[in-house]
Length: 158
Image (cartoon, rainbow, N blue to C red; front, side, top):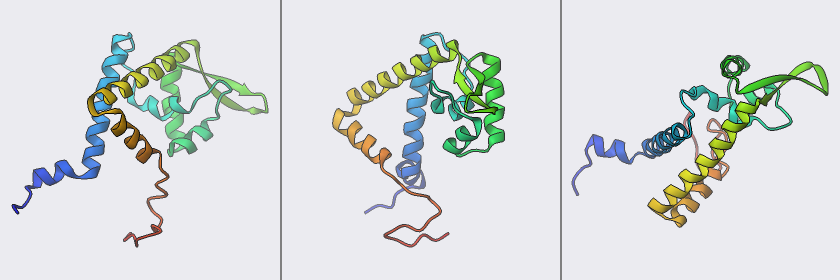
């Protein structure tokens, strides 16, 4: 059996395959959003926007859910406030705290994101099949655990 070239090994590495899949989805997402008139949305907005809901979310809770620092969230929030995608409201449960909510423009954007995401999943199913998409979803939804903790079945070498 012939040895795999370094390039072939790199292209079959699971991390590389995941990255390639992400790039495919991201490219299609951006193209479809542009067709709907949404241009120049900062990539960093994906740290904040997926965590918002109608009742509002504290910036510290966004940071925890996104796995980033509060400072990073506040930096992104400044950009999103300037773009008019979010608003800050006083938390009715704690008047000292602020909640982040979608502005009307941000709510329109969120609807477009959800619609485009469904379209992309349908497109992927047409290309690789419903069963493959279902299997992919099941694998990605599985609880992978903390990458820094030892696995239940193997010893990690950190």
